[in-house]
Amino acid sequence: MSLENRIHLQSEDPDLLIEFDLPPGTHAVIGASPKSEITLPLTGIPPFSGILGRFQDGRLFIAELDHSVARRVDLPDYFSIPPYQFVLFHPAEPEAVVEAGPESKPSRGTTRDQIASSIRSLFRNRPKPAPAKEKTPPPEESPASEETPPAEPPAGAAS
Image 1 (spheres, rainbow, N blue to C red):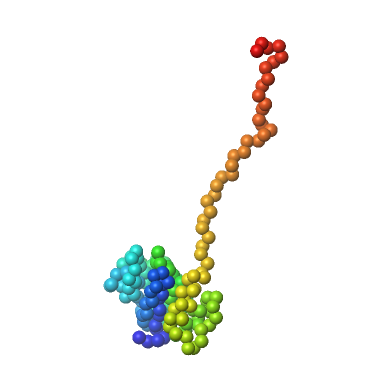
Image 2: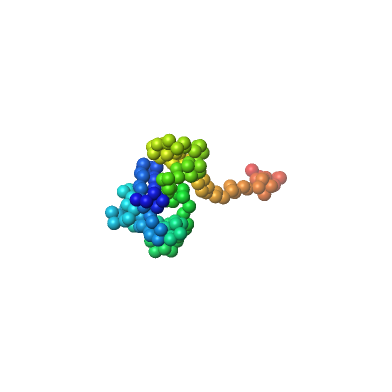
């Protein structure tokens, strides 16, 4: 594997780290199938989920299988294959991953476990989307002025 073309894909829950090579001008299918170039051994993921590719100039992209939806990937980057969240990063630049998080840069003597721990913290500190609030209609109010007092019997009426 060439270090300049190497990419790491990591999930925090479950703890998973996959290392692969993606040279310029190539792409790889991501999925749970052993026939995928990037195999995710996780339950609940489709056999073939998407494509991760690298243009000739080195830029990365991620796309649907039919290339209908594609977007550029700048490392480090997050993406999801429900129900899992993943981070893509270049192993030679752990500082870039850590800079995205709240912790400081690791020193050059940082171990792989310490770097992985820093990446996990990115998932923990990532803002979660606010739950959608249901709109409840305002309670119907009956205006007091519209209420009429009960009618009194006319004077002189027999009771």
